[in-house]
Length: 92
Image: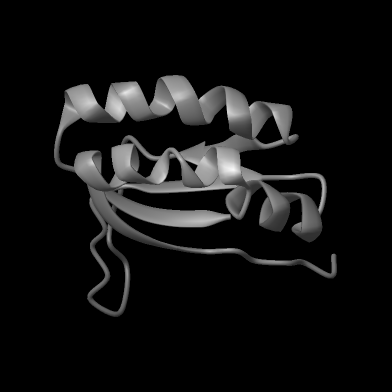
């Protein structure tokens, strides 16, 4: 799961992370990238922040994101940030 995010409200973001973090961990998710520095290289892409979360499988990530428990956190995330995300499967 890859997200490009711009945090717009640090207090609301902290509240979101308190709830979403344990849900993600319980689903087997773990951060493999949480950006603190980004250097644009090509294509005019200059994201404010990036995160990559690894799950045991595509299905586990899909089930987490579409779960009722996580859906309940979306208003907190939307209050705290702007962004976009994708769920990516790998054949490696």
